Length: 170
Image: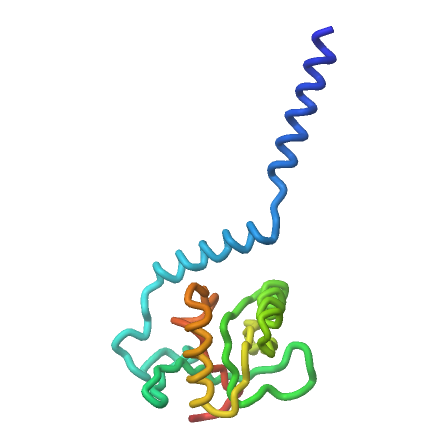
């Protein structure tokens, strides 16, 4: 008599435990963003006090119309199309995993941005929120984007949105 009740209680406990451990995309994303923010806050600022004398392959700081803009020049390819990347691309995140980059780009598209993905030769995938006509227009876009998204974590980027330019010198 006690055995069927004990078995039923054990089964009920097991079902409750399994149901409570189901991960969701929302919970995964929240935990990931917290971990990234912590990692970025603990990382040393390699460019502090160095101006343009930053290690090769790192974004360089530029002043444009009184605004500071990070610019990275490197070979790029479009992830979803055969065309060439635009000269100025405002990246708001950089990922190694295609699925994470696509998810972020889709969220931006849902907000009305013409988001795209660019990939460098190391396999880093940049989530691009806009491709303005000039560096000055990119600086203006970045200022507006940061004002609309004050709590955004710029995954894989230095201090905020970064202008990614495909092999163009400024």
